[in-house]
Image (cartoon, rainbow, N blue to C red; front, side):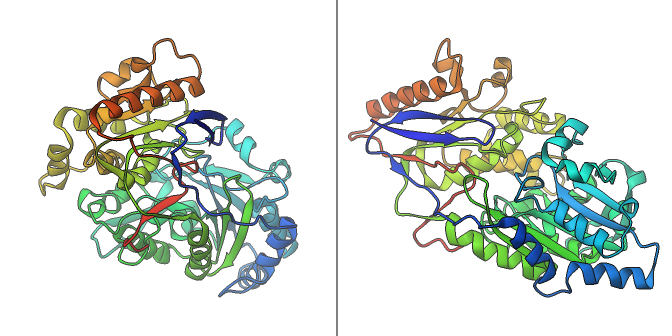
Length: 457
């Protein structure tokens, strides 16, 4: 046996795995030295647009009462908004130095369709020096029509409603993390707007069954990806003066800061990301062991890890997924629960047929249930062993997977639950295979992207 480390962001631990386990880890990216200086340098020497200070001065010259908005991610993304790698304070300070009054700067949290962040949660991620400036901080509410404004329609046919605080601002700054994304290819850039500050109803086309059925709507693929292309169209309609994106390593340290034009800065960050998160893989496995990472605050977000693991698993294989859920509701919203129940009742094929039928009425958050089917098309739901201590046991009567606690009696801590579940899964495979099971461990969870030979990203 050998020991491997699980880093879920909010907790970490080690367990023992078979000595022949393949460790499919993403490459190493060097963290930036003197990140504070690099952040300021990026804001003053951006790609494809004027420096931030110049942008502010130009706006104030034409409109002295100009207002600015800085879009930030919510706490499902480990964007550095505080500390020596914090990108928010330098942005705000640069704008104030250029003559913009703090009272005219708003921080808009791009929650998408997620719940609003609490004040305590905001204080956990935002530099206290930003709070001391008494800037107005607003949670985007995708369901509050009084806070939304129409900007038109796109080629896919959906009416686009966006946060009015964003649209009504004279200077628009986006911030975000560029990491792999199981629908849009990568996060960052245009996603801060779409779906970050988009109306819930406007996400229906973007996350519809037919769009997400595209094989191009997956990790690290932008070209021909309908989710990316739609999000970019919406972002261009909304406008953006500067995009500030970061890349991080597996320890959440800053590896790159990319400021500038909406597309150019984002693409530069994507190329940096690909250089170390794409993991060459030569074969499929009987068992894949992974975890939900920092993003896995609930079951809804855990689908990201399942999608990453799915291509590596042999038909009828086993996926063992470790999760530490920190959200008040460890499963997700009511619509997500409704759709996961339908998935469990109907089975994968009938569920897909249902949401692809032209007569189907879209249900918000059906997209995440659809993402789980990428795993369940490869393995039966019961072969997903879900290791979590936060999800109520009774929920597994309708969640289409196996509760690891039903296999491991009396487990009180996550490391023991994961290690014991692994032993049970290996025993099951050994009883049915003529050889020792092939096992892979994804130490980076949903962040490292295995790419099987012949598949291009």
